[in-house]
Image 1 (cartoon, rainbow, N blue to C red):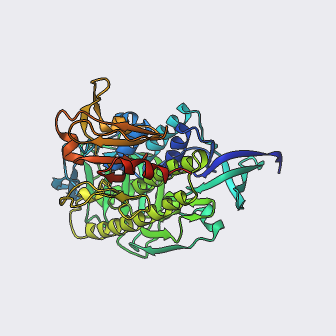
Image 2 (cartoon, rainbow, N blue to C red):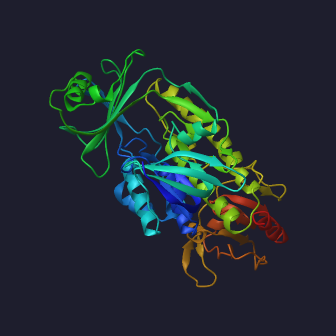
Image 3 (cartoon, rainbow, N blue to C red):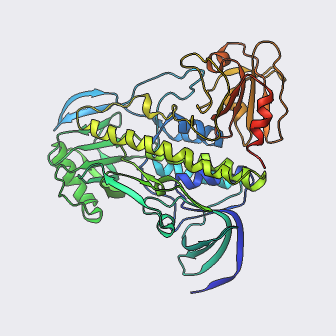
Length: 499
């Protein structure tokens, strides 16, 4: 084994190049923060597994500059077609259909295979000057008061020593980082029945629907056409809790052909190439801590969900999005270390709530035709109890926007140029935004260079409808940090985010 002599240095070392690690790396890259993103695999995740992107994730992806590519590659969730053998029973929509509004520009889930999401994020990272070090695993680390010293091992056996200010473990449910930290991972099964998941070519099946055989012999069978490719995502759940699935044995073309013929009662469907296969038993799990000194856990390394409701991937995306701006504030602006503690405070509460939601949906799906409502969109996820949240107004009406809530979008006019803009366009980037709203000419508070003040011309009344009046500090991750009627509160609040 060859070991390089020199120690390389970086600000943030990220282990795991799935969606969580990539979102964090993209955010750090656009902020000019030195980082390394490593993954022991030889390429990006190959399967379709986390295919449902919720409206809140689409907003995150708009900010990161990848939404256009994702919308071009993805599509809406198709209606479900229920079958009983070779007989169609009926169709229905699993998801509530909704139209965009000024405050909510993306009102429905978008479907995109996870491997394509990973590809698009990796391409964006390269545009920003970063890259993924594949075939490079984190094989050990030690931390001290000033940083983390990590050992990276490549597939050829060579090793490298990296010194980083911080380490982020985004290395999945079997996280080596979490194990090395000794952080407990409380887990319990959601369902004892095993399921087979595969991306496979199936000829003879219409691509207009998500096809479901709820009473297939042996267990529920579903086939969903994947966006932009010829494959279907197959999910086959065994009714027998003692059934054992071997992906190598049960994921061959011949085995899947038998499974589909027996499950559908149709002999006209032909199984072709199998692109990816996996097996799982739904479980829920959460790390006891999301931070240990200079090491953070994010994504599946911190929480694992049932796939029901499409919550796991989307929650993981927001982990990376929450952490990126806080790391920049500490590394570049002299913000106190306690700002990084709020990552764990905010995301642990969200993860616990979402675990409960996904588990409830999983069990509800057994009771009939599954439905997904607005509670799965993650637009109502917020941080009302965060140490970073300041609601200083009084006597707010029921349903009013409050500090800690997601900041809504709204069309308006830029007072400087007269151009029509959306608030999300104003928020986009690495800065915080101060909205000065009210009749006449509200005072403009003094702000540091990493924040911007915007006084929109509310030509259609949509800004007032969404926000009311006052001063609102919009955090870099799109949440209302401060809401106040006094412009003097703004500078004091922003000062808490710096040294």
